[in-house]
Image: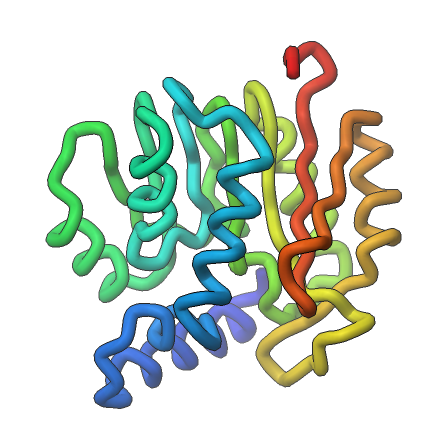
Length: 205
């Protein structure tokens, strides 16, 4: 992602953090806690997370770790984000050796090999790099041992802004099928959002 676009995202979340609204979902850009929860639920139901190593790109406050841990025993979770304030809060809030956080730009940092790689909300930011989404999907898929899961805003419903970009779900699915035939589209949980799952073809289930 271009540095100007990164700064725009950084400033958006910085302003949210300093707005006086001490609401986690607002700081991270979610419209409501319920919208955050239903996206996490779609992710959790799309793969087997028990005893898996999970990489969360654009992890925010690490709340996906909380959600998954209530349901499954994760072997390890690593969250990556470019916002120090989010990461400081996450590290202070979560105290376990199975959960770690890293400060980095997800579009540039080397992605370590993990069983499952997730991007919840972090691929929706507008960028001048025309192939940004395709590059990120390919990088995630290459690094994942078993599956990648990501959600996007639906172009047919969501009104785009200067910060956020929506996508045509069928176009995204078509690109994903150039990487693997094992692609699942989940679009029955939110009016403006959809989730896509890519599994490695040699992965059972």
